[in-house]
Length: 62
Image (cartoon, rainbow, N blue to C red; front, side, top):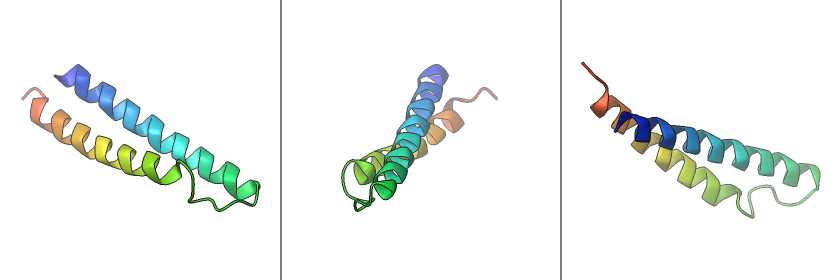
């Protein structure tokens, strides 16, 4: 369970990083930065990070 939680946390960080990268690229290209896949990637990344942190807290050995 802990391995799955850590994997989900890494995926969440990757999604947030990808969303930030796409945001910066769209801003440099003078397009609306918040359009495109930026918002869905950010929302999914935040939800996954919260869920994975709760899972890590619950499955951490005492």
